[in-house]
Image (cartoon, rainbow, N blue to C red; front, side):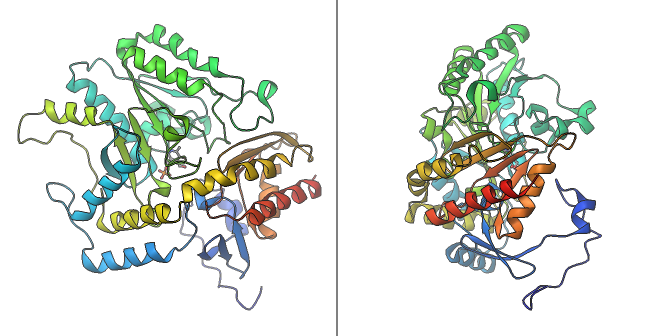
Length: 443
Ligand code: PLP
């Protein structure tokens, strides 16, 4: 241990989320500081952040402007009730978000996380149909392998089996799933959007015929699926989904918790793909992950329908959180949006994406690599699993890189990369060179 090491804490009391608790606690890995592109680990090492935390610190760590806004606001107004009261920054943050959403999605509901944004979006969809006198529309269509957080709504429409199986008896009824879009035999090593797979959207027609379209409230997908291992939508796929939804009056919900705020080189994936859904769920990069906050951007017509259907002077949507638009989180959001704008970080992501793609695909031919997928500043490298040890190889690559000062992520046997949008070209090279070296070194 170096002289700059921080003492290790007692790890017993904490039940860690999405973590192999026993394995972790046997050899804890701690991050104790951060600045810009780097973390500082417990033993004093600088660690290059190849993942923007958890796909969320898009402007880099500990940005002074955001920290100052948080400090200022926590002295000025620490908390204000969000129900039947308001504070100016809630309205300002909503207006600023509405400004960068696709045209028409200019009504914003605040939550505290991505999971809450999903549940909120599903409820708004149901409330909208009910307000129109179509409360028989209660079903949702999700997609296999999708990740929509961990609320009961989110795991029900989500398609990650491990996240569902312990809770299967109590999942939301009336949910069906589209097939996921990954096909390594057809589309391995696609650069950007695969040319194969648009037809998979047509499966929605099959589900509509099965369930009767007039019972379906909406379809929810991640435009680019992140947590499941970076699944890039085939060319034309989202367009087809959008067209089918429009034809049958289904609401299309894009879960942009990862893709929002520049990850693909535009404010939203919706803007990037040129497809405007009815609802967008947001969190993570909304305020550079500096403080918990999520949001749901809703087409104005939905807001007008739900509010218009209620009797005058009554609450229109029985939903909300104590911390919806928390003043400090709202201040952080305004500061982060200003920072993204001032530093033109979404455009920066766009201009770096070719370089990022080239660096990722340079690992084609490295040992164990089955597939490489990428779009914007996201990439996934899928490895051959080691016999009878799924996930073990990716975990070892992760550890190997961490020991050499580079933080990456892995899901099963897919390595995932999503650096802050301030990443420098040399740092992109360093991330992938470290992985290449790990792949050569490990069995
Ligand atoms: N939706 C997507 C697409 C996500 O990637 C995540 C988190 O990774 C969530 C929802 C859930 O967000 P949170 O962890 O803030 O609840």
